Image (cartoon, rainbow, N blue to C red; front, side, top):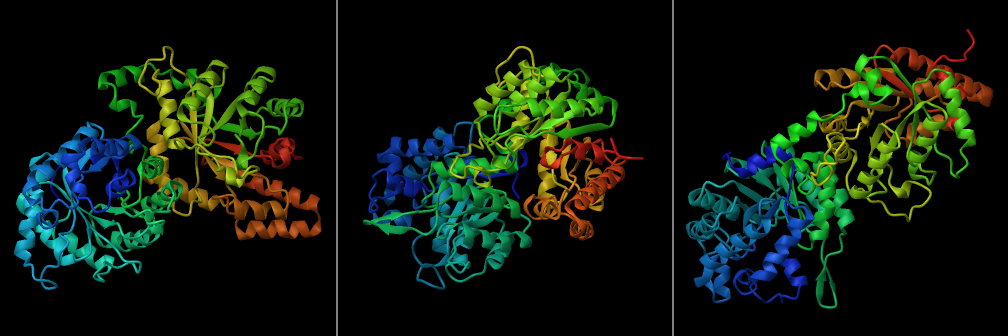
Length: 623
């Protein structure tokens, strides 16, 4: 592969986001379908530039020039083939102007619109010369790469690839288009055309246009195992529907966000949209990309806006962890940590909660762990409860902070206020979506996920706000994050775990552990990968068979082993009280087995019964 800016960006960002459907966006702005859209580079340059800027502002890493049909054959049909050079050069220049330093520019090249041999009268040499002519102008105008897209004929894209290699040394993204059956328009299977594109030297291989996200996902699942190049996917916003004479694409930005997560989960490195995908789709995809690879974010990346020296100076201003909180001191001294969870009340009366916190404090527990709207339920502010407990009881709190309900600016304001109020320990989690909780019609924000928020807190701890401005005295948070040893896709979970550590996490807390062997396997993998961070194990005393079934089936990563389920089931058959006793015994057994393996434990008492949590830790149990 050619060494180039595309490779550099892929190495730095991990995942790249292309823009959306330029043609359909221009169509939506009133350009009639019978116009030559490529000519707009000369006759409506402001409209083209503004459309590019919309995608850049939405977070695209790569902007495609408005030159998809700017080859001699297609321009001839409009009688403007003599302006081929001007149209292609202007296309790159307009994209570059919009991209600035925020995005790369891809010179877009589509099919010729005619059949070439052996399917038509145009020879492969003629076809190659048409492609070479266009690509030469795109390269000379300063494109960072060439993207060959929406090709249905493998033979034709082969000639385009050969032409690109003859015309320039730029990297080439080669994308075929699909039918609803998942094969190319000429019936070639994705795994077959992917192998050919790799043999012919494409730098990135993928699919675009014609179909929606689901068919595109199925195609890249067949491509990824057979190539060693980055794989791209840029589907349409579904199959268009004709409404009052206009083609309308119905796939929503939210739908594209969800499918972007799936594209990345199976291994795509380059994502984007095609026909019908607007800047709103790009913005939604940006969220999914940033959640998977926070270093890929293009908008609020402080390190891209300030000098290396300023970053180093800010990092040097961080408060030593042992001076931040009692939890920080225990981490520094490698002391075992105990924490018990208290869920905020649904109302504002905290008397009962304060009594429970006092009981936890009197038992010698280190922390009260306060969740933020567990299962997306509406409860009292956990931050307010944390302040009340710390001030009235005198035990430190570990405050959950989720990304669900606030935008970035609101999060920054909250956290600055929390620090001022003396809350110094955070457990940063993405949070459950509202549809899981009491108010399914409530909206979520999710500007960032837990990785992005960890990055933000690390910046605040370095005396930098979101915009790279100095905030004076740095915050002094100890940052914990969640990790799921029982994740279905463990490799994906480990990648996210690495990004959380890289973002500045000091501590990790697992989902409830019922299978100690699973935790041991996870810790072995973490050690082999060199992920050095203290890990606390979650512990949940089961109180009934129904509780065990809920944990096993509805709490991600909290699988209850068959032998444990059988013990609870047998105890439940005796009585509910017996089931509680056995559940606490199981939790205590887990505690004793994990204690030598982890930095601490986090116990969640079912039904708010603190005595169950203390008993699981061996406190108050009969000798």
